[in-house]
Image (cartoon, rainbow, N blue to C red; front, side):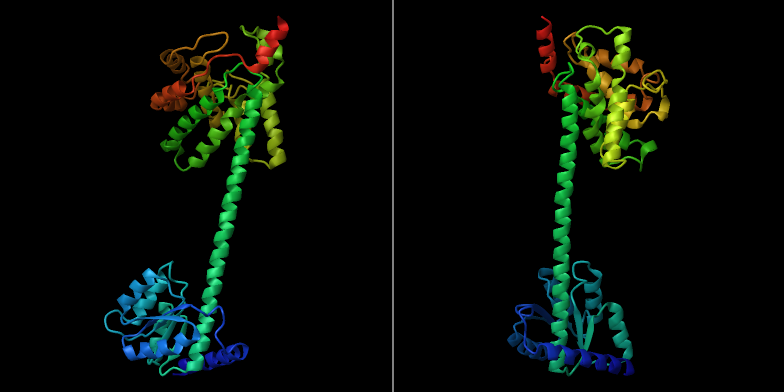
Length: 402
């Protein structure tokens, strides 16, 4: 009884304060839905006749199970709950409401004739927000309901505000991601405009890279290290592999025939040019930005598994995985595509050359991934079949040379 008396004294003080601030129903209260749960119809009638004139919408449930069904259909703003009911008692109703994430925020006010300490503690453990002893004081009831409604309104506003913020963040994140994709692809297209590759080269390259990346995500040795985000970034970044070609002289970059040894040495500089450019951009944007993967691809996609590649002569797993994946995609596309100076190799011939390079030019795991996705490689090749026409820049250069 001492516990209940202390709570009642505190509640009476709060009630008086609330009543001094506002003795009439406010706009916040009007139309708020209150669910009364009591097995005695006369009690529900008394509460409804008292609360309805104050602007509340009041519904009644005669048993616990019915109350939960009504809550599932429409969430109330406050629940006035009796404890002792046949079937499911008020303790269990309260416990279920507070355990459900959808309903745990609904204020539950216990309206009961049980004043013993054990019942009150049990109700607190079940999650009750407030207590009122029968026969209830109307002034206290009004104050406590108003306090509970205000708490519920504040919670609803916070939830709405949080959702609005999350929506704004999601839209902003999507805009940033789109901007990044456009930036990456625009840079790649700029480099491609000076090259003699066909217009669909970048589309094929990033589709090939995505297939291989998806296969790596499922490999046991990479489980937990790679995910869908890796695949997405690989798809976006692969087109940057040859961005360094913007720094190669036209007489070499656009030469229709085979390069001399000296010319090829100059051509190999495109890896360093591209890597250095993207490295500087990555530092400017904040290290490990969306350009970091493109940087690694540009630097290392001409490295070979056995260490005979360029520009650093890296070997094995010292070569970043993104570059090992791009290396195979790039070679397959070069072999199987038409160029102004050559006809495309068949898929089978391209496949044989790649298999011959397994463990020397290419990472064996990448080759295995290629074999697993072979049919899809062929499908991409068919869907993005370039014409083999010269690029606009090369057409202009050739015209000037005539």
